[in-house]
Image (cartoon, rainbow, N blue to C red; front, side):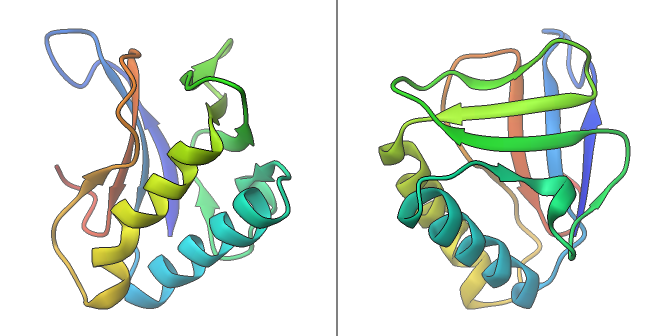
Length: 126
């Protein structure tokens, strides 16, 4: 699984932090990691510390917050995905199809109106 940041992906100047190039086994590992660290233990999850994720040009840190803020950054290198517990539970549901069979599809992992989206895509496309 790889992690990168793509700036200005469309005419609306929107950006994407992308988790890509993974198979069903890695999707399961990632889903279980979100559930264990964030949902169950209520701790932050720094993807630079995850052995099966290769950061390309950025890092992403997940954390619980009282409101859904989406992905925030000050430098376009370190990103913070701050969501409510309910949104992380929903994120698990959105990942489920990738954990049940190999897929060529993609999924945005939250629905917050911010300039940067979080894309989950085994084939790197959308």
